[in-house]
Length: 414
Image 1 (cartoon, one colour):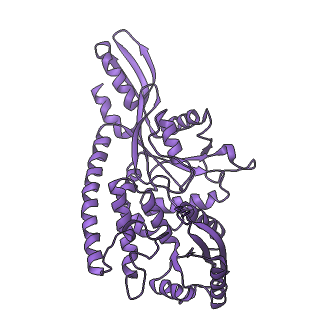
Image 2 (tube, rainbow, N blue to C red; image 1 turned 90 degrees about the vertical axis):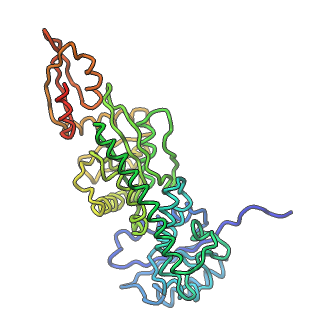
Image 3 (cartoon, rainbow, N blue to C red; image 1 turned 90 degrees about the horizontal axis):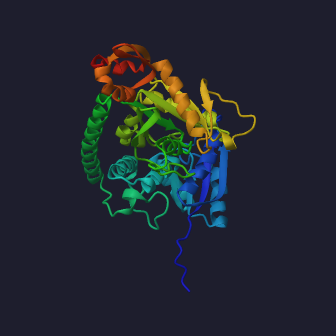
């Protein structure tokens, strides 16, 4: 009987610890194993080495290289994945020395993005990132666009029979750029309309698998608008939905791709328009996985990427999620913050209350007299302002509340 099941790729992980990465090295290697699992492969072995600096030819030393070569033979290894970014020359040297496919952390992440991309825009963004990564490697006996045997590192454009001609690749990148610029214009138009509508805009950001999609679904309600699963990079595409926070007050909430350590620059460039969905909001909700022992490193990673995307000036509400499975001695490292589990019954209500409290700090107080003849305007007012008190007087309603500084002009109509 012929076994038609696809053979699971057997992988060996390797990484070097230097003075520069010593603090995050352990968590980074754990994450590399999780990324490999997400890509559908099986981790058989792992090798690490402490070095003052990476070796120019092989990244690792000759002794460690021999150990890995022996482990490949004994463990029937198909692929070696390095935690560090390899130069094109290092990649060639390692494949020649080890006799198996060698990729780095960057190509692994690109591969997962290719696997996760669902929308036409997402597929284009991933393809552009992969081609930009592969372009300098298409020299001599370097990485081919279509690897024999497939597996990790061969998804996306790697699966198609593209010519390994640098001029062709550049032409393809230019064509993708043009298509993405059209999409970016459409996104900008939508953002402009959203801004003009008077809606207060909230963006969910955070490390991958922190629970952003679960939070999005909980805020929206019964309907599951965003795919959620306990895995890295479960969602790539930006999704924006309307959420009612109290009475009729409505905001827009945007969920987008999660961050990770050493996110490839090719991806940041390709996903620029998608990431800008969160860069053009009035409030950011930074979602943090409280159950992850390395959450502080995750926080620092997110803050660095926020800085790179010029998002530091946007107000932030820090939310520690997954408190139901967090250690009993958990202590938040970012303040002010709130702690909850969005999966628990009262989690979404705590989150909405925290958002409203944050808005009290960001909004301006107002008082207006609304004539009874214009009472029909009150429901409309409640949609873009936090109405706290409505008192009936002789000829009008006396309304007290809070409104976003950007929307204060709309009170002129009342």
